[in-house]
Length: 365
Image: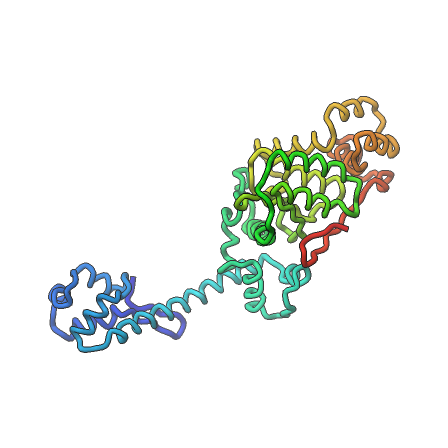
């Protein structure tokens, strides 16, 4: 490490740079100078090379030896540290600018009320950084930033990592403001059963589920998706609570409820993390099975398949028998290859939710 650093047109000199000059002009060896300074040759060498900061003790000894003030030497160190911090801040901003390229400022402006700052990229970065409550946006390039990334997602792009981490950060920040009771798994199980009774309540299900989950220590948050995140939801332990986040990337009735119960499955199995599309592995398969069996009881589904009738009325009748939104049954039949995705006769069964962000959080309409 050098005892000075150049950055653009500015040079930051470490106190060791000046001490080296003093030793050279004195005609003493470093070892002799160290003895006179009452320190070890090793400590002096580290200081001269800029590998060690000037301590108050050495500053005091230098002031006595050279007839200067203690503050003179400490100010040299403080001035050097300030310039280095400025250099690194500039370098960090360059990293932030690269990370920011993965994001669209309009997402934060339109959904969370950040100010309109056209063509002011650095100001936009500052606003997003403060909104997300991080020291630098570059932290979102790390896979272990907020929650675990499962091993099956080794090939995910950096852009998707950033977007997924940002969404989880927003959800975590919201969850941290909540004052929920301690997580109670038994109560949560009862709340999950209650949620299943709301699949046909298109207008009011979110606040009802949110409040029911909240009382069990699970903070349920729906967020607008960041395009390209390739994530459907996430779960994370936060103190005595659990954050459960899903986004509106897939808000058709069938896909929304499957995504929600997939994440619930992760909570039930004690497996927390981000769920990406096309993710594989033991935990994902277990969460999928939990969602499938919770939304449509397997025995009744098998009997329905035996009937061989999958027209509009048959699906509505079966959905009524099991107390589910018909769109959920339609989605399962399509996923199992029994009903075509482009069958327009099924359009009356499809329902798409919309997420709006209010001051109090997400709500469904």
